[in-house]
Image (cartoon, rainbow, N blue to C red; front, top):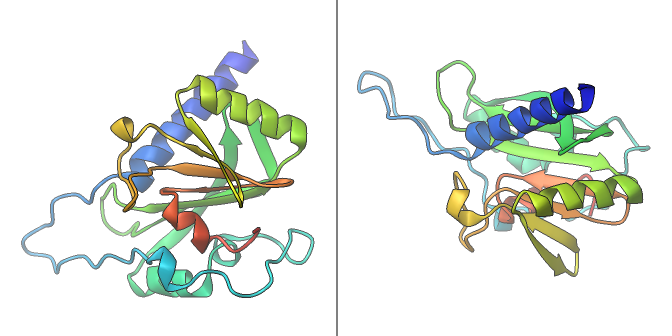
Length: 188
C-alpha cells in the first residue's frame, strides 16, 4: 500500500513538474506589462569552469545552474522553489529539483532543473521506470539520455526534445529540454 501511495505521489510530482515547467505561458493580461521571457539559451553560456561535486559545497537552486542563467531568471523576477528529486519510485535524497518561475503571478510557465548523485542500482531502477513509462533512451558521449515522447511534451527545444534526464557516472541531471541540460553545471 505504501509503495502505491509513493508511486502515485511521485507520478503526481512528475506530472506537476511537466505541467509547471514545460508549458506555454498563460494569455497575458491586457492591463499588465508584457512578461519577459528569461529563457537562457543553452549555447549562450555552457559551463566553462571545473564542475563542483556535491562534496565541495551544498547544492542549491542557484549553485546547480550557471551564474548567467540565475542572473537572467532573477532579472526577470523569477525565483526557485526546491523540491525532492524523484524518478519513478526512486527518491534521490542527495540531490535537488528546482522549479523556476514568477510566483507573484498565476502562470503555468516555468523552467525545471535537477541534479543528484545516484547509485548504480538506483540509476538502473530509475531508467527502467522511465523506459516502462514510454521515455526514449539515447546514448551519447556525455552519458545516457532519457527523453519524454515529444508527442506528449509540453514544450520542446530546437531539436524536438522535451523533458530530458542525463545519467552519468554516479549522477543524473534533469531539465525541461535536452538543450537546457548544458545550463546545469553541478556535474558534467
